[in-house]
Length: 218
Image (cartoon, rainbow, N blue to C red; front, side, top):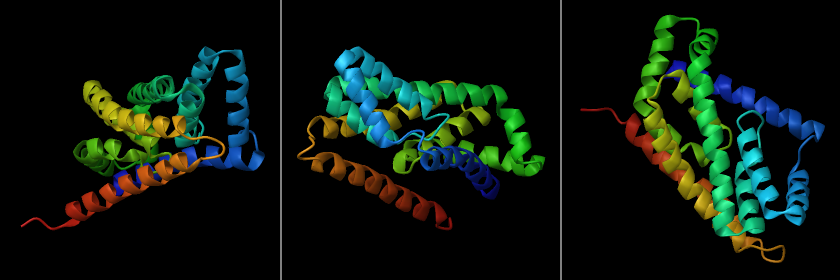
C-alpha cells in the first residue's frame, strides 16, 4: 500500500501546486468565478452552462473549487440545468483524465516509482481499492482528479471506471446544485450546510472503511 500512497501524494502535490500558484498570484478567485457567471448569465444561460462545464473540466489541470462551482451552478441556473452543466463538466474531466493517463500512464508510473516491484504493488493495491477510492474521492479536493488519473495508469477497465465515476459524481452534483438553487445572498445557509454535510459524510465513510480494512483477518 505504501507505493500507492507515495504515488497519490506525488500526483496530489502536483495538483496542489497549481492551487497554491493560483491562490498566491490571484489569477483566479471565487470572486472572479462569480463575476464571470454573472456576466455569462446576462448574455445567455447557455453561455453560463458552457462556462460551468469549462471550469469543472479545467479542474483536471488547475485546482478549481469544484463544490463551490457546482453550488453556484444551481444558484444561477436552477437545480436541473445547473446539475446537467455541472455533471457534464465533471464527466468530461474524469474521462479525459482517465484517457490521458491510460495513454501516458506507464511512463508516468516509471518516473514516479523506479522500482518495478513497488510499482506493481501500487497497481495491485489500486486495483483492489480503486473503486472505493473513486466513490469516496469527493471527501476532499484534488483526490477525484488523482483517482481518475490512477484509474488510467493502472488500466482499470473503462466501463468500470465510467460507472464508478458516474456513481461518485451524480449524487454529489444533484445535492450540491439543489442546495445552490434554494440558496440566496440573504440566506446562504443551505449551501453552507450542504458543503459541510457532504464533506463530513464522505469523511465518516472513509473512516469506517479504513477502520474495517485495518482489522486483521482471522
